[in-house]
Length: 245
Ligand SMILES: *Cc1c(COP(=O)(O)O)cnc(C)c1O
Image (cartoon, rainbow, N blue to C red; front, side):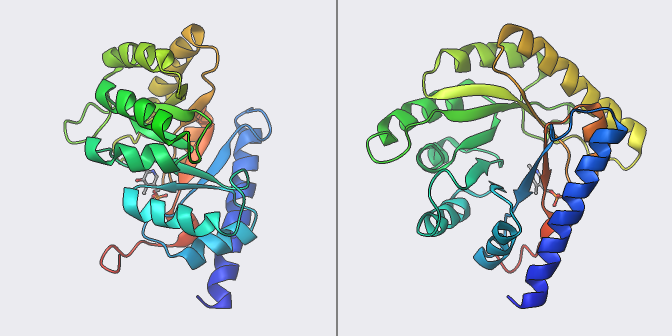
């Protein structure tokens, strides 16, 4: 990667951080209540390195093996507390072990079987490395589209109840990927549903403090609605090329 790529990534991160701070002010959110998660799927080590140089510490990955490879690489250069790894992709049950052994956060827990497996496999991985509980978000399907992963609103509470009993998982909140719409009012309405649901969940589980919502195309509406973590890929690293992966 050339120097100019590095400086573009750095500039993008600085610009996004500023946009987030401005949005917090505009929508009367607490200063620094919205965190930037850099979504680095399909991007090479060098791109993540450039982001780290720009001060970025938390990264989101969608594909298990690709994410694990990056985590293992950066482990040689940074201590465990310096970087934070978030799994944000769909979870197949035969991939839960690698997730449990490597990631700090999982945003895409959407069924009981997955929660149970992550808990049990985190227990087994305690001997070698990972002792802290996995920080867990329940993925909610706000748009009701059959094609998208995520639980229905109705199932959120049963799943939360299970997660709350599992010692190696800490329930931190909700995540969603709403239907891709460009008009602001629809984006805002979908996010506000999730904010209301998080308030209900927080009343039952006081440690719930996280709403993972907002991507490059709908970050403003997400922050207005109450997001605490925006997941940004394209606006940091540029367009993804899935063919090169
Ligand atoms: C790819 C991805 C993102 C980032 O999307 P951009 O539009 O590139 O910002 C965020 N969240 C999830 C779950 C993703 O898969």
